[in-house]
Image (tube, rainbow, N blue to C red; front, side, top):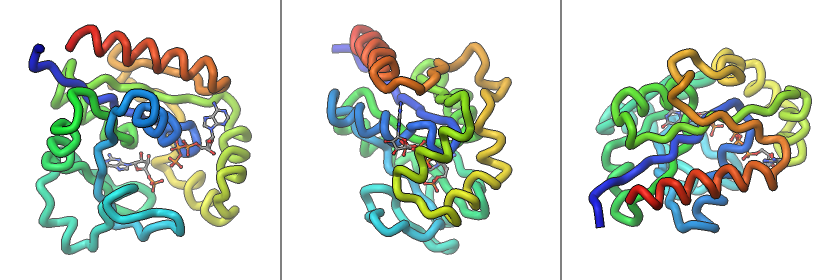
Length: 189
Ligand SMILES: Nc1ncnc2c1ncn2[C@@H]1O[C@H](COP(=O)(O)OP(=O)(O)OP(=O)(O)O)[C@@H](O)[C@H]1O
Ligand SMILES: Nc1nc2c(ncn2[C@@H]2O[C@H](COP(=O)(O)O)[C@@H](O)[C@H]2O)c(=O)[nH]1
């Protein structure tokens, strides 16, 4: 067995399907998600230590972070410890990040970081998916009006040629692409 390991970094704008893919990787392949930290308050269904580690401004400052960003007024960051906790479970793990975090991962981890950038061609479809998911119109508006979400609709130049772009329109086609990526990574272990 080689000592190779990979982190699948899933990025893209709100509603493009990042969580859906992360959940699929866990269910289908047992690929665990790296749990990240945020100062954002939990949403109704969210659990501390499952969806995020929810932090205060003070506790966030104490973390040993590989990268951190300010997104829509809140802080988010991924810790070295969180990454290693996931790697203890599996040599392939996933993490959901904004595009700024995805660039940092690629810069710091090189070929260990496999970045998937998700797109949905029609922004109206993104809004509909968030409505169907149960988000309130107020939540959707805050999110879609943030400059970070606007930015994350487009593949950043720093990820061009260094990431896999998936148009997540038809789930069955997306699933096939994800299956190919996982099988290819498993071959390299
Ligand atoms: N290919 C698809 N076709 C139709 N609906 C989809 C598809 N992929 C995901 N969805 C649905 O779209 C909604 C948004 O997906 P998801 O929550 O995974 O997005 P996200 O990128 O994690 O969003 P956020 O950044 O806001 O957390 C969910 O209800 C999900 O079931
Ligand atoms: N760079 C980082 N981005 C992160 C991290 N954890 C989550 N995220 C991204 O933030 C936005 C907003 O998330 P939401 O849960 O409030 O909707 C989204 O793009 C996430 O992917 C992180 O540790 N670092």
